[in-house]
Image 1 (cartoon, rainbow, N blue to C red):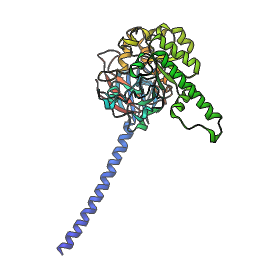
Image 2 (cartoon, rainbow, N blue to C red; image 1 turned 180 degrees about the horizontal axis):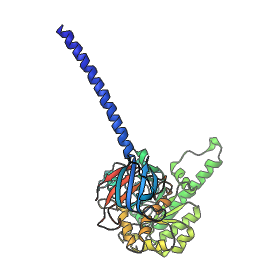
Image 3 (spheres, helix red, strand yellow; image 1 turned 90 degrees about the vertical axis):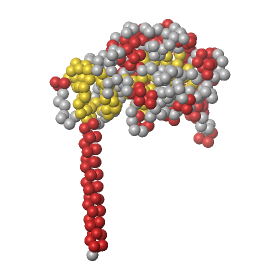
Image 4 (tube, rainbow, N blue to C red; image 1 turned 30 degrees about the vertical axis):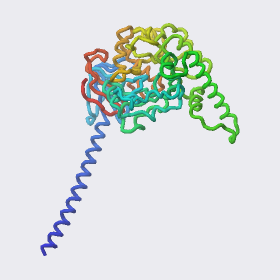
Length: 422
């Protein structure tokens, strides 16, 4: 009798526990659902909001819903629903865009195992794909994100005649597919003394250009054969020539890292000869070739304002950004690559120095927001605070270009990824 009683009691307890587990699970799911809903709906208040799509807004508010910007305007003109999470900053800007870096392929420390930005086995390797090496969990990604960088143009870096492809990513996401904005943004090329330092061949500038021209001509022939040959006579797939072919057909832009006036002119000649879409990168001596750059109608991703002046960047100027802006040349600033730790610069600080050397505040901010987005072809998603665009925002406790100010809140795709001032 006792055994039957104990058995029934045990069964009742098991049923009770199961019911409790189901109830607890149900409550947890409800909690997570409402937490997600609240976090996905945010009201961002700003004493000053720089939308980069018109005049700044004083005492404004931005509503965020489902990863996108829902409304932007004056606080007294927009009704904020009660269930929206409220955050506030003295100054609000679009998420910052680093127009050229190697972050994610280059790690934060000087460890050989996570320095994948330059493959030195061959001077011409346009087929290398950035997303095959990008590490979204790299501490360097977190480092730049905490300083307001929400979008990176990153990948294979300067130093080879053709080092590989670049990509555009957000600095926050759960998976690689979450963070990728453009898996192939450009093919990275380099002209100048850096190439001969990394490879036995080429040894001179003219040899390097001849090697590139030869590969472009091969790619042109490859495209012709693919187009005109019968199905059973088409050439075998060649991923190097295939990639260069996409450059020649203007499907992928060519980003040429060229510092000296000699290399800038060479890049312009190559563009004229082969007709690809050209972005000048670095361009330390671009102030000497203003009319040539304007005539070619190309954009510039200018070197970091504070780049060290030696070698090919010997003749850099702190005022180049202001000169390009005055002449109406579309340009952006970048972090570039550094050999020291942490292995990148921060574009916020580079723009601040440009602001101190001839650029207005909003023109300097444009170099790391909307102008960078336009050069990279992603202005429909990021670079300004407008309805329908990705909800990428940075909140500061003061003037963003003042060294005593801090990045306090960072929002990427409608998610608050940082809430601490430093």
